Image (cartoon, rainbow, N blue to C red; front, top):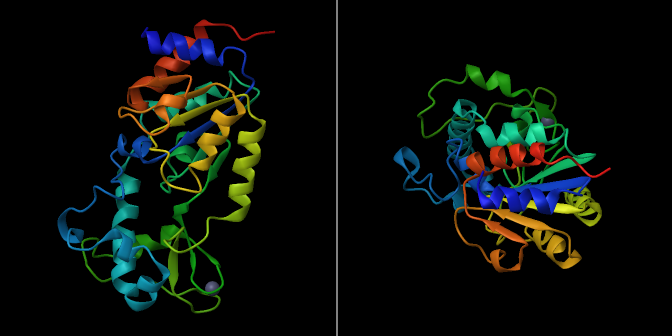
Length: 258
Ligand SMILES: [Zn+2]
């Protein structure tokens, strides 16, 4: 067992309520292309920041929808890695374990995590543009031409408005309820795990700093140093797929406080 795993288990030994904050590094290890490195193939010449906006969707609905359909298929093909499963296991070790994620791929839920707050929405939950009526993603299977550059979005059965992905676009506010719920969790928890996020994207990244400011144990799991690294109790330089299973074993070996 690595010294980092032992140290992390010590830091979490007495915790009853754990919040795990996850970002793109977590997904990337499962083969989900991140926003920055998906400039490959057909979409190489488009700037993601120019596709992921309400204006882009209104101007070029077919192009934006085709891009999201492509990303949606990439997510479906990805499998949650061992780190996701370790987080599910850890639910037994704490009275309360909540995951707060910046990811939109739904992998935590697919792995079986019970409490997940999605700060940036979900790419597996589609809805109509004007009224937010939900649209069953299974119906997207009917859309062929996965590699096409233009796919006209289907229309909402109830109001006829085009169907859009349930993600938060640039220029849109984060969902208020999720943000409040996440803040309440971080205010009340007694330990925080920050996994695969650079802690740079505000306001979501504020949550990591709340943990630091509150003086609770904050553990960072990230192969790269981040602005948070020098402020945390432990900066564990490893991928989530390796570190989280190690952490689960280390915690299993140390009985919880009674
Ligand atoms: Zn509608």
